[in-house]
Length: 155
Image (cartoon, rainbow, N blue to C red):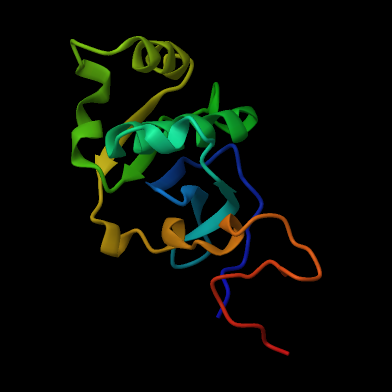
């Protein structure tokens, strides 16, 4: 069954799940909704890597995925009532806020991150299912290249 999007509620904490690979960046904005409280997606984001970003190492891909997600949903996350959690499958990013040495690009991104109240937590890629959906990374939909989704069509 395809995930059902919920309307974001500013009175509840958000969860941002990110993933990056050589094919692109993916992220999911989620919140707990319903009884019993289950995490439901509010929005999905994906982007192909630019020609320059393809040359980044895996750590910078994951960091770029966080930055892209925060830019995309800054209207919900910047100044949010509760600190939100970012889930990534790159354990080194758990130490992002305490890093002593950053390259210039990472320093610019870290300055951008100061606008948000969040923690980064490690979650193995096998448990990061929603953010792993590669469906919209195949380029724009055309008659020859229809966009696909994580689930097969129901018709």
